Image (cartoon, rainbow, N blue to C red; front, side):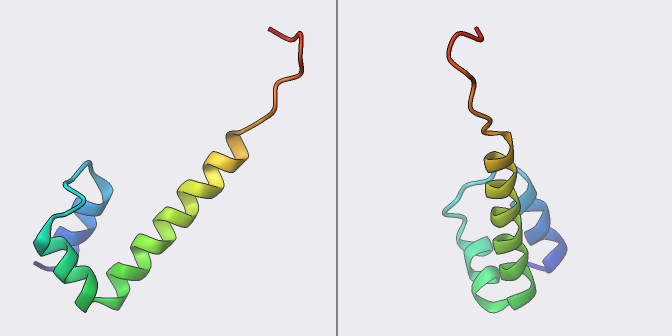
Length: 58
């Protein structure tokens, strides 16, 4: 697997236990870092969107 295929799989709904992808991530620091960066961004986005709703606003 090359980096382009790994990035494509990381960006889509893929099997989290995809052996080829996991092997590539183990061997490729750039793609592993991209995975960490994506997860960090997703957490930051979720945190930013988690706005508390005041009681009685509904």
